[in-house]
Image 1 (cartoon, rainbow, N blue to C red):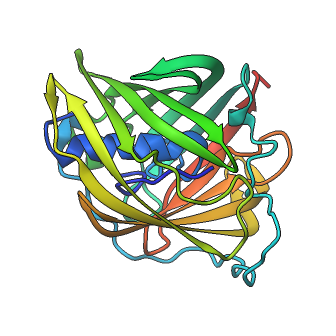
Image 2 (image 1 turned 30 degrees about the horizontal axis):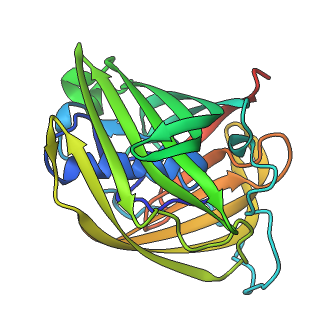
Length: 303
């Protein structure tokens, strides 16, 4: 199921600071665990981080391949539902290898390997018996012309996302993040009030806008930041998507987040809609539809 994000999935700051940067990274990781991200993600995509806390580049509009128009609104359950999603089954592992792109949608600025492991019985704050998705992202900044002195550097981000199914929705309670870059480790945690789910059921209808309001509180470096009040609007549709990893039936998710650290921030993600890889993100794009990441290889339980 989708999670509210805060920033474009492939433009997140690399080091955690006591500012909206921290919430940006945390929100994108929350989004990427079970939904709209490519690694970022809605961020997210892998969650692509800008090294050294640099200001992310704002993607410019560009040409992209035409996509199938979204279907008319529907009241029936779709393949955007949680059933069969590999990241909702305890014991499953998955891996998404991919490229992250510059604002032109074609220049590769980094490569990512994202590994996921799922389990039951986790605890977060005052909650026990939670479902845990552990995510380890290894990002290699491959383009020195774009990344400057960070070209060739490797960043490792470890995130834990805690949730449970309540009624017909999955509620996310919070997440923790550890970031290792150039020998420096930074950590942060975030929790949501009320629980950060989009308001969509486990089996959302296509073409229907689901709205939710929530606040995000982040703790980093021993300091608790003021809660950020935010709202998200999430819309699901279905189409085929072709990426370097192959062609897949996809659930296309549009997320618009307002409030807090963002102003009308829109992002898109395509998740595999059926089969062995259901639920894995294979492509992300910015508000203009420009590709920000795509998968090059998918693995589930090592295959």
